[in-house]
Length: 234
Image (cartoon, rainbow, N blue to C red; front, side, top):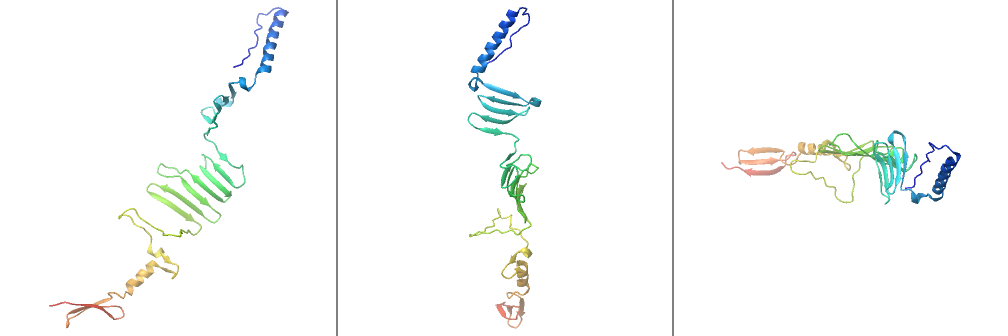
C-alpha cells in the first residue's frame, strides 16, 4: 500500500539541510498525487463515533456500529443487513416494510388497509398474521395446542366450488359447535329448533300400549295412527 511519512527535521541546522528535506517531501507528494488511484488502495477505513466504522476493502464493504457488523456487501454482491428497517417508500402508499422492531413484515395499500406479520411474546406462540381493512380485522396465530382464526367487524365467508370437509384428528376429537347457532338460511330456523321440534312431535314411537285381550304391544304416532304391533305370547 502506498504510504507517506513527513521528513524528520529535528537536528537540522542549515538552510541546505532544510531545503533537501523539503525537496524530498515535495518529490514524494508529487509522486503520490500523480500515481495513486483506486487501483493502489487495498483498504479504506473511515472511523466514526463510539468505535463505529466504515471499511472498503478487497472483500467488499462493511459498516460496523462499534460492536457488530450491521451491513456487509461482498464482492459477489451478497448483502447482509442486521437490525435494519427496509421500506419501499418513505411515506405514501402502496408500501412494503420489514422492521425487526415493530412489524416483521408489512404491506400497505392505504393507512387502514394492510397485512402484517408480528412476533408474539412467549415460546409457545407463532407469529401472528393480521389483515386489516376499514371495516374489520382478521387475525391468525397458534398458541400452544390451539390455532386461532378470528374475524371482527365483518361476516366471515368460507366458500369453495367443491366440498368443505371438517375432519377432527381421531375418535376422541369432535367438530364442536352449538346447535342453536347452526342456522338454515332457507328456512331461517336453527338446528336446535328443528331437533327439539322433531323430539316433541315425532311421528315415530309417540305412544306404546299393551292390549291385554290380544296380548299385542302397539305403537302409535302422535295423531293416533298405529305404526306397529308385536304379539307377546303368554
